[in-house]
Length: 229
Ligand SMILES: Nc1ncnc2c1ncn2[C@@H]1O[C@H](COP(=O)(O)OP(=O)(O)OP(=O)(O)O)[C@@H](O)[C@H]1O
Image (cartoon, rainbow, N blue to C red; front, top):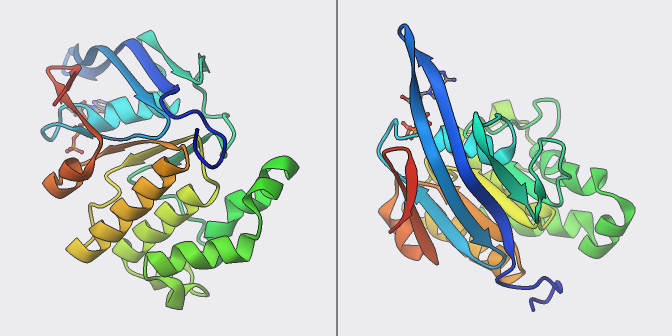
């Protein structure tokens, strides 16, 4: 049991027999050919594979943004949907989706301000949580700037802070370290393991061997299937 009272080892995310094809030329190409996977509370798991192997396609299906042609994705035993609450599933897509009209600090605070009362009460002091995350990711000095006023890598760190602020049951992050230097990759890995220690289930796609080495478990996507290793 974690401090947050979450049962470590509970399967949070499960995919069974997921298939997805896309139009190509006059036919279709099947990118996901029956993906099975299970990721549990308290673990940091990476998903890797060559460019074009289907990581983003799988990620979209796992998030509920895209419908599989066959198979199912379950979050805590229920069908995944893009409408699942932010404190249950927090998604960090490659296109980070920061709100342009909000400052960086306001962006990070947004899920906390939108959270249902009992979730907000559990999370405590919003401003303190925002400052802590921005400081760990070394963007606290930019808190009052807008996304268009900072670099891509800084936006990526803010998007990660926003995704973690609410202490979700599941964090799905598509290449969250792609634009970060070695020191920042270390800081991000620290935060991901801290979240896992609090019971969050973390699944991230990555090309980075340092990130893979730091994971609790590694998945690969090969020929449209997901395997361990
Ligand atoms: N919406 C779509 N329409 C048509 N083809 C698509 C679509 N989405 C993905 N594909 C195809 O599916 C394959 C897998 O793409 P995907 O973006 O999932 O790869 P990836 O492993 O994430 O690659 P990268 O590491 O370069 O980001 C590619 O051949 C891509 O062209």
